[in-house]
Length: 262
Image (cartoon, rainbow, N blue to C red; front, side, top):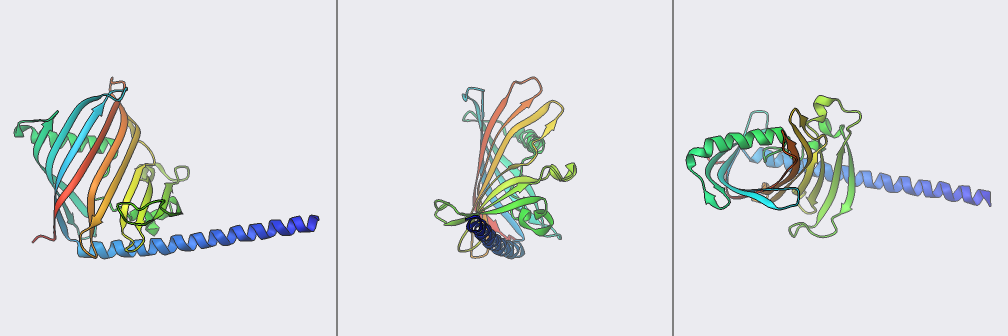
């Protein structure tokens, strides 16, 4: 009887190891294809210009909307010699609670929003969403294959890959750059359809502390090689100076892309 139990335990362990090996093989295969697709995309994309409308709202602790803002702008990406993209933006309109504000405020508005993004540790569309899966960054993460998404994402059947940062063994200067992220990968093209992510270590500085910051980026096909950002979403909670709490949510919608304009 004891021999039967031991044999069963060995077979169960072997089965578990075999399943784990299969899952790891599937993960590595998907990641290899995702990186290859992204590299082909980078090779084809030199610069990008898009129209963008950004919506922002602030709430009190009870969820009541205190203020709404809308920003109209043009966003730009330009590839450098290292293959990385630089982000810039040009504001053309600004609304508070539905009322257009004086265009003379636009330079100040742009500066304030850039400063807030930096304080929060927020990302923008220049962030190489696939960089976490590359060997030089993957070593800082536990990456798992979570199978298929329970339903299509924007009509695309997707693989799900999750990357969780190692916050215990990573030095602090690297830790501040890491994010926990869930990828939804198109099963056909291996492009990223959606990425949901949050800083692995929330910003905490003098007079400013983040307690929550969740972001997502949605992509759509531009052509067979290039997929472009369609929507960026951010939601967070912070404490600044003497305010009890700041609750904010924003969405940015992109349209009218111009690729590789001379």
